[in-house]
Image 1: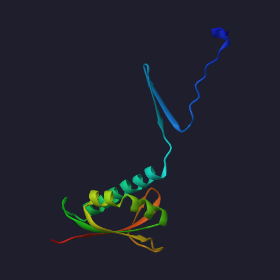
Image 2: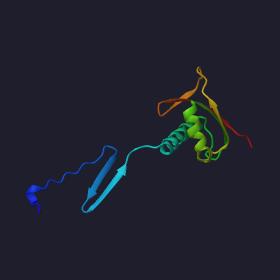
Image 3: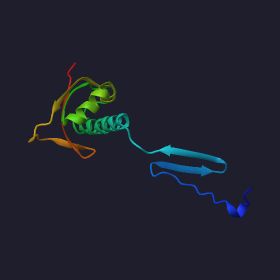
Image 4: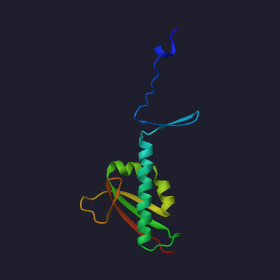
Length: 124
């Protein structure tokens, strides 16, 4: 039998967990990023870049486009996984994924990765 002064309770939270408590409620969030989360994040960041390009081109909100993207192999694999999401969000009827040419002009930064974009509005 141990008394209260003989027991030491210590809470150790691993670095990858974010722990929050309010009253008796405790929530732990796992902050580790897996391949699926990273792929979706890259895609959503690219959506933002394409939407900015559409805006700079003064395209109508409903204007359909063709999109060509040049990027490294790893990013291409991520975008391939979420190609339907990308197409739906930017109203692309066709998306071509290419390898990034070393001297490519007109690149944008997607989470510290160089990406070339070609946005072509479709005429009706």
